[in-house]
Amino acid sequence: ELKVEQNPLFLSMQEGKNYTIYCNYSTTSDRLYWYRQDPGKSLESLFVLLSNGAVKQEGRLMASLDTKARLSTLHITAAVHDLSATYFCAVPNAGGTSYGKLTFGQGTILTVHP
Amino acid sequence: EAQVTQNPRYLITVTGKKLTVTCSQNMNHEYMSWYRQDPGLGLRQIYYSMNVEVTDKGDVPEGYKVSRKEKRNFPLILESPSPNQTSLYFCASSWGSFMNTEAFFGQGTRLTVV
Image (cartoon, rainbow over the protein chains, first blue to last red):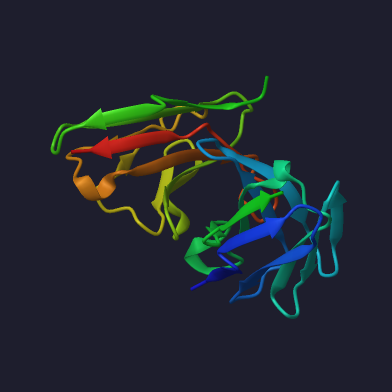
């Protein structure tokens, strides 16, 4: 059974600092998705990582995927208050009866303060 | 505008009173699914559908039913709601399985069962 674990689950950052959110998963998958959720809102797609070594950047966020290590990182550079949100990684199941199902991490609640 | 629409957005109901949460997408997507979101648990899949008249259980199907009579609609039915079904529910759709395409999420339905 695929398990996806994020850490940390809570992250309080000062503006201007850098930090990384980690997403580990337990079975083989060569793709991974990152989503952002603002309080009371839906999930917004941030990054689609489709192969080993994939790196994508959007503004102050950069995501990478290492399929051999079964690890994805979401790096935050020079955090600003607008980045405060909950971030989820999600991994599609690659086989068996759950083929194609998305399994989510628990989410990382990020708070950026002055 | 391409979107996934859920209704209602907020619902308070009493134990045992049947309810339906509707989900509609206008993107001609084949794949649709329902998730529930609970603090610290991320999103967990309830049911999914790969096409019209094809549905299957996700991780937490107990107490829920679905139907897929038309491609665009995928309602979630709670025949006899209980307080442990109080949660935030999301409908999602995609072109194919999540192995190949990212998911688009509805706005969410916050359900409270008293």
